[in-house]
Length: 411
Image 1 (cartoon, one colour):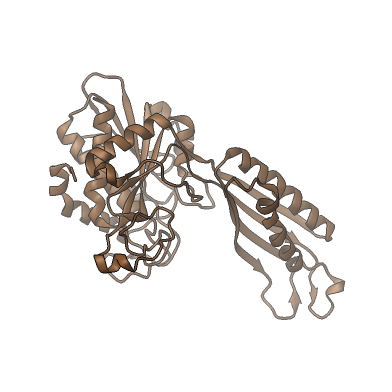
Image 2 (tube, helix red, strand yellow):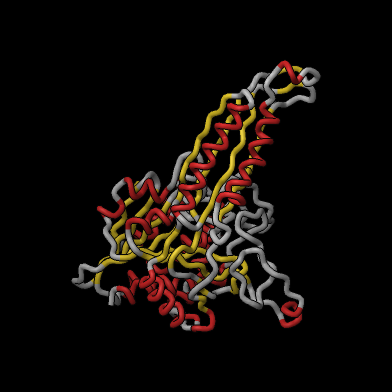
């Protein structure tokens, strides 16, 4: 592995930064401590620092030489609203908040690249280090979109933009991506059915919103299975259902929430149209009123072919061609980096987060559930699980990749 020696020498310090951020998780658009931590580091490296982009976003600008060329490197910095079940010394200090997706590691890999490039300045042009809030789904909105709406690419123009996300189930340090659609769109919905509450013994005297919601949940599953071409990828999941609080009272209202994902913007639109038609017709036909909140939160994450090829070549120069997957399977998870890729061509990549097995373990290897597996990884603890933790061993690899990507782009 061809790692930058200075970044390797800083490994222990970078780990300490990562674990400090992990212990102090902050949710979407509330990343005040994290943003201040990042801004302080970037200032100490000698970068121009702009805070408050899109709320709590931070951009560090580094220039060298005379070229007008530029590159954007993005890391996300928000945590998840979930309980951490790890017991190590740097576990979350705040109940109900956890860095369960590795954004603490993404942030520190980008800080490591910024520190190296600021010291070396072996490039000709401008690097924009973009630290984004609110990547995770939330009730407020997309952090990427908020930064864009706040003038991100007008204030900090870039020719191409790249993002690196950890991938459980992929061998530690390996790098995977693909040209074209790599991650799904994400639509978030909330459906509120209002009927007429009554005694459980006389349901005919009311309009039962629970039965109507149950009918809807079943009918929604036909949107994908009976309306979308089977060769396309899409999934609709109901993740929350709330109605009533008694054994013998039929409530007035039932509320369901969930998400819809696809790998095509055309399919995304098709599903939305069918969702509204089914929901309104069933609710009204069964005598209830309905309120639909439908947020097309993120489009499909779509990688530019040329940018992807360049990123893979840089990755191969660091980890070796045998550890680069140039056409990984697309997944239906989503990332609002997709908004940035609608404005600037670029590439989204995964870096492996899972340690290799021993020979004995490999002979009994089970299939991981990430869809990114290479042979020789342990059963992976997926992101968004309460025992997840970012693998500190991969920090030098990720930081080296981001630094070399900038240097390659700005030769």
